[in-house]
Image 1: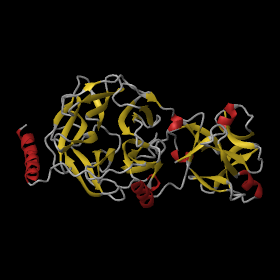
Image 2 (image 1 turned 180 degrees about the vertical axis):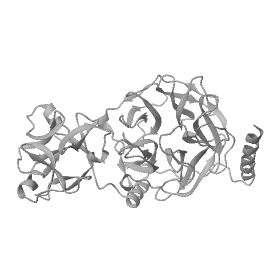
Image 3 (image 1 turned 180 degrees about the horizontal axis):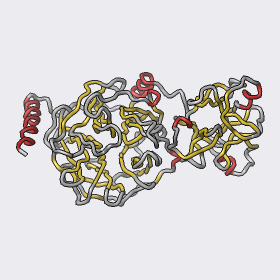
Image 4 (image 1 turned 60 degrees about the vertical axis):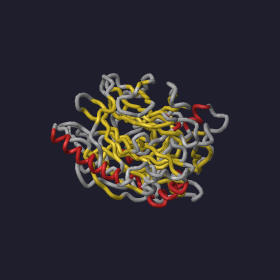
Length: 463
């Protein structure tokens, strides 16, 4: 115990010296700017882990609901120390307007491996990441340091790094810092008498809100404090859960000021990756479940964070990292399913799936008419979705005019929802791409068709 105190005394002395030099005064807050978009951090996993990558990933969104991966869904930075991988990357816009990323030091799913450290990156505008380092949060043996969240504690004039640990119980610890290099000693931040996991914290209207998973019952809850000080929180919501298991809670304040979103990450990559609620007032115990039609997480994404962006920042990210050269097609009336190929058959199946590349398509100019589109399989280059006997299958382009016409479709406003998309056959123009019994085919459809048939023919182009 003496060694632990001594180790953290050195850190606190360094912090105290910086304070004496005038370096830990509350940083100057960046001038107010309008946020018109969002950025999301995450790592990736898939059901059999073929899509696992434990580097820092970024995605952007205009509406905060439907996400576009950057850098072809590859990492923009990868740790080079510790466990050589990260999980749970948390992005914070600091008081000076620049960014810091803090993440769990763990690669893979061997949760018996523990680290006393967190990964840290600095970034001016998210087009590059500098100053990579690890910071030691504690000196306990066999205690994990998971799922950090960070907030500015105005009363202290420092940032609070709160994270999951398992000292005397599964609880949250906190360390305070001014520079994300030197930290204070750990303190118990939240230990409500039952085991907890995955904190997320937002300060709004002078109140500090802490959302977490209760490991005893498997539900997400919200607590609040008028000070944000350790051990000052009172739970004020009833339990929230969708699916079979949920964790990785994350709060997002909407750019339009209309309220909040609450994301929950599925416990396992074999389940749907994210679930979502909305509320007009974070202070009320009132969260509404959003339909999966309304949101699309990045491909294979897991447990991350979301921050608002200015228009210039959004444009800079697109310019620097680029958007995917592939798309996915999401079903309107089965929004947990996407178009994929399997054994050369076109169908819709629940997401996530393996091989995960079976749902990825290059939407290219129509093979028979450049005004239309054709769908080339990312993992079967030269093979396209085409209809044959009205059934849709994946076949290699044989160069014939018939094949090219069969593989060409024309985009139209969605038959069931004009904000989505339907695809009319090029050479059988009264028929549309639709699913029936989860299999893809082309059938005659129009405004007078039954609603369910028009829903079957309506898709959202996502990435």
